[in-house]
Amino acid sequence: MKGRMKAHSGNFIAAFVSAAFLWALALSASPQLHERVHPDANSPEHTCAVTFIASGSYDHSAHVPLITAPVPAVQFSKILALSPQWVQSPFLGASIFEHAPPAFA
Image (tube, one colour):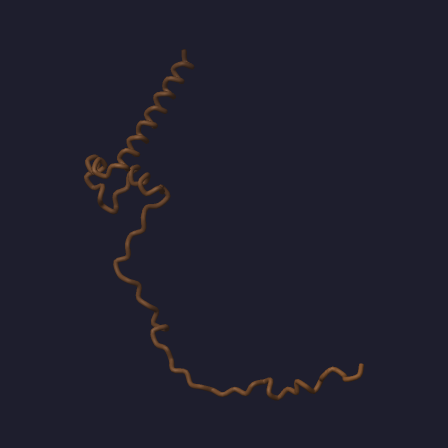
């Protein structure tokens, strides 16, 4: 008798959880119905099972939008003028043909 009672209570819990999940899916598919259940459903701070299902994530909510644009760093705002500098090539002083292969090996 106890085994049957446990089985019936387990079936009832499974049916209740399934019905709750299907209800959340229906609310996520219909924003008007979700708004009837939750009057603040359109606010960005609103979080419930329906918004988690609709966003596809339960780990974190969407990022809060930036209020102001980021300001560029001060050290990169000025470009200094470069002055030309002549540098002698290191290869001009080398004798590249001095060590040619021998003519008669």
